[in-house]
Image: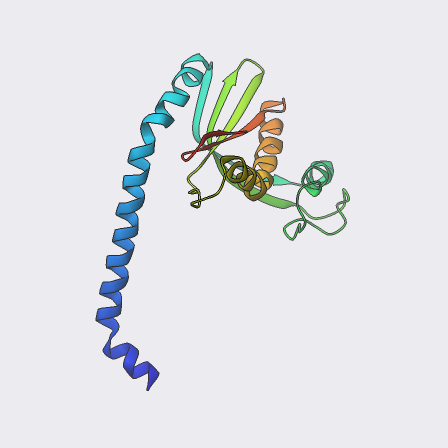
Length: 171
């Protein structure tokens, strides 16, 4: 009975879903378009002053041995669950493959800053400080991984920062 009802209404369900998805997409595009001038203004000077600008910079690497031990200890400070990493974290453990993409990396000589863009919206009534704290709680683990990886790639530990389209730089 349920399957028949679904199949009889399938076209209507698909049309409603597409309509809803299109509405959400249009709303989000309008939101970003409204926020874009502040984004461009914020990054204009840092990008112009950087000796090297890496956008949407992909990374992919296999981590094993002492690097795996180091990665594990780096992330244990902030991560509660390390399901992707071996249990013991010794040099004899298996290797893990990690990959990702950094939104923006600005390099100046030996210094580098990884910028991660966030489009989370502020709930009405929430204070800016609480929103920024929520961004850190939600994304610091990701940033710690980026900093570790890019430290290995660049040979020096980079700084990591978030840019929220809602509030600008998240401190």
